[in-house]
Image (tube, rainbow, N blue to C red; front, side, top):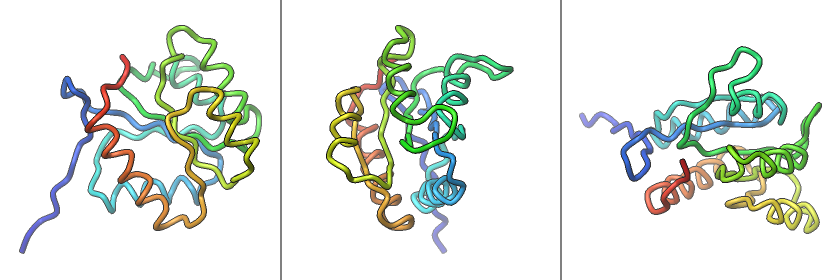
Length: 153
């Protein structure tokens, strides 16, 4: 019987890539975690319920340890306190975080939302249309991305 091979995404210098999931919807967070598990990905994963909590994690504020690169952020747009667009504006103004690699995962397919997200230099925009298959496909694509692209430090 073959045991599944667990994979750790690493950057070009073999540092494990951390995932920061920024989403207030527990169902979406669980779907992302299930998709990672289905792909046998065991990278460190952190969760923030809104943009402010994500910034606190990235900056090491409010009792959090600073999340050191390399990391990838998956970002929902509609959240309380600080939504995804506010997060994008704030992170792009921060000289220490401005190069963060961010993929938007949103239920919105509105052209103005897609354009506004890309205006803030995101790596990709993925519509949450099917919480099972679309997350597996999206994370599989992100896996391929991490194997080809040099991530910022």
